[in-house]
Image (cartoon, rainbow, N blue to C red; front, side, top):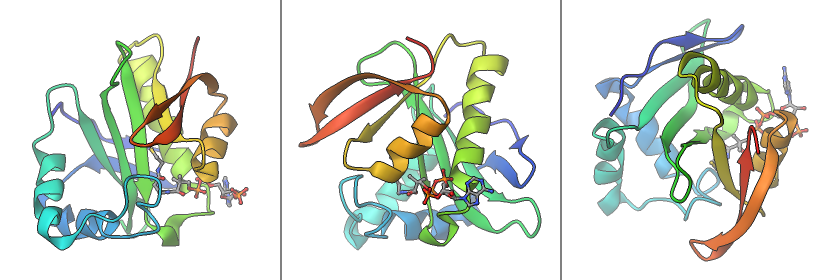
Length: 165
Ligand SMILES: CC(C)(COP(=O)(O)OP(=O)(O)OC[C@H]1O[C@@H](n2cnc3c(N)ncnc32)[C@H](O)[C@@H]1OP(=O)(O)O)[C@@H](O)C(=O)NCCC(=O)NCCS
């Protein structure tokens, strides 16, 4: 796992994961709504290994816990990892349903996108999402990311969005 620098936005703090986040991460992984386009809820038998994977990620992976600036209420996760096909980083994100519809996710994803482009000086960053995941597609389009291509993966049509062609 690569180190996750502390980042912030007007409303949010993005910080490295702590062992005490395990319960929150487990609740995200076990939530059928959150996992609707991510292969479904992770069942209890596989849950602790899936949570542990967030703490022992491969080199090149970075994860942030997103929390409110006031009150430090955990809202979601933003994750960076090498993309499956392209030689660049991919952004992924999952937020608790109670945090949807408030613009928190886009604020956090924009912050990590800017970190990759400005601090890490990468030429581009990708995000891959199911075409059926309209909330996720909308978020990426609102950030000005454009469609690179579509493909079938994990049994579903996926759209790859990019910050630059
Ligand atoms: C994808 C996901 C992060 C989108 O969350 P979201 O809250 O809809 O996204 P945003 O942060 O962009 O919020 C946008 C909504 O908040 C509303 N909003 C309210 N206050 C706002 C504010 N201050 N700023 C911006 N938007 C605000 C917007 O109007 C918009 O509503 P709309 O989509 O009905 O038009 C969320 O659905 C999720 O976690 N899904 C499960 C995991 C997943 O599928 N991840 C994607 C695969 S990588």
